[in-house]
Every structure is written in structure tokens, then in C-alpha cells.
Image 1: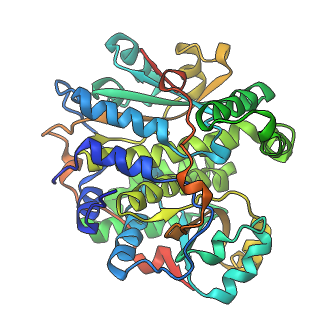
Image 2 (image 1 turned 180 degrees about the vertical axis):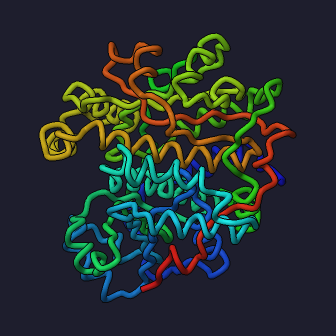
Length: 216
Length: 216
């Protein structure tokens, strides 16, 4: 593995900002987009359970339909690719078993040999205390994907805008998520900043490092 | 901004895994660590409010004290740097005003000119519906930092292990967080994998892309 220089990371993170106006005509090239989808697939999650589905929307009509339920923010319609991060409302035994079988398939061995791991997950996020708040737990995992995808995108020179300002119930209805036991957690439109976005050139506002980082 | 090639991103993400055994003697060099702290500072958050404090622990005695409250996982003690991501339990008017003043300081202009933005935040995460669940909202933001920092670390060749398996109340007590209105959200030990970690060479388990990504 060839690491990148620390300075290149910082340059990309300083270049990144929450894009308010996207260049409507500019589409992310296929190879770059494939890497961003692969970033989503490779996102870490608690136990590796991947309690999510990422819906990538390019359909212009569908995206226009979402604008009124996105606090009228045009980014959902004007970006290149809109990622709607959805999560499972419940964590089920069936999902755990699908995951256990997938481990056996990828790493070899049997599901029986993974019984201890299966029981640990069942006793926590299915039948345990976290099972009561599985949607909340799953939403945390979606935010890992959000953080990872934004950072990955910046390193590839792709703009994005994290969005919590939308009506989840309406997203769920329009995207027909209930039938799959899913609900919308958070949005990430991706693409390219427009030349006319005044936010692109504003200095980034962060608290001083000593206010948010403490050493012990 | 010079983007990295998509292939380099994917290589780093495939190299990354949840490190179970750290190399106890190997410390992250200062320049690399500074970039990871800068990654934390630059993490995006809802409204830019940064409702967090990141506690970086290198003190060996303190870290040993945390092991029993971390499901006995040794990573918190054996890593190079332990990041305890803590968040504000409440979002206050004072925090919003500190942020508004910081915007005026960095971008010029007056706090008065930002009154509309201030009122929007106050009406949402302080006095609005999200204000009731401010700790939960803040925790989501911490998971953005988690996703971003893990991805950034991988690109710099630094190992990490996201950890939800700990007792937040005990962390809060040991780190004396209550006096600052903070609570522990999630942990990220960082450092270098040990040669003896059997997990380092296991194939990564993910669902097939078509199971977690849908195109519309």
C-alpha cells in the first residue's frame, strides 16, 4: 500500500466544502464514480453488519420530485449523482444469518463455526439493548458511510454536500422504502461546484484546534 | 488541488481493516499525526456547529484504566494514539453564539449580519425538534468524524479500529466529562497492526455491491 503524503490529504480536506450550487451539466466520469461506489461497499460498520442500502439517483424527474421535501435545496436535483443513504428499521435474525453465510462464503468454513459471533450479534443488536434502538444504531453506521464518502470524494476532486435538511417520511414514501424495511438516514449529492457558488471561495470556519482537541 | 487516482483510494480502503492487535512499540510520526488531528478539525458537521471534543490519549496508565470498560479490548491501551470522540449533551444558545462569533472572526463582518443563520440554528437544534435530541444529533456528527478519520488514516497508511463496545458512563466518569457537558460517543484507536494479528490477512467480508447499492 502506497500512502499519500499528509500534505495532500490536508489540501483535499481544505478544498472540500458543502457545495451549495452544483454545475448541472458536469457528470462524474465512470471510473471515478465506480471508486466512490466501491468506497460505499467497503465502508466499515459495527460487526460488519452493513445495515444499509445506498440509493444512487440520476433520474432527473425523480430528483425534481424530491426538491420540495429537501427544504427546497436544489443540490439534490442539480448534482451529478445523488446518494440517498437508507438504513434498516429493524435488525433481524434473517439479516444476521445472511451476513454469517456471507462470511463463510468469503472466508471459507461453515456457518456453524461462526455460532459464537452470531450469538454475540443476536444478543446485542437484535435481541439485546441495542435491538430496541436498531434504527438509531443503523443510522450511526450510515454516518460512517457519509464521513468516509465525503473524504474519499474530496481526495478524488469530487464535490459534495452533506444534507440532513429533508423530510424522511416523504423520502421513504417517494422511494417506496417501507416494503424493504428501510428508512432514509442522510443524503449526499455529489458532483462539481458551479463557478457561481459564492460559498466556494469563503474561508472555512472551524474552532481553533485547542478548543476541539484535548491531549491526555 | 491534485486528486489521487481512484485506484489508490481503493487500494487504501482494501488495505484498511478493524485492527485487533496493535504493534505496541510503534508510534505514529508527528507530521502524520498532525494531519490526522487536522482531519478532525476539518470534519464537516451539521450547520458547521462542531458539537464535539476529541480527546487524544497517550497516557499509558489512563488507557489501562479504560480497558475493563472497553469489553476488555486491548486496542485502547496498545495503539499509538487513542481518540475518544465526545459530544455535547445539549446544544446551547451560548455554543451557537460562540460559533456565530467565530464565523464573523474568520470571514469578516458582524454577528448581527448572521442573525438569520443564528435563528435557523436556534429554531432547529437548540429550541426546535432536534433540540430535544441534541445528544443524538451530536452523536451523528461524531460518526462523520469517525468515518472521515478512518478513511484519512488508511490513506496515510495508519491502522485503526472503530469501537462501539465500551461503557459510556464509565468513560464519562474516568475522563471527567460531565463538568464540560460532554459524553462519550465512539472510540478510534490508531496506530500500526501487529504482525501477529490474524485478522490482518483475512479477506474482507462485504455484501455484493448490487445488494447494497441500487440505481434509479
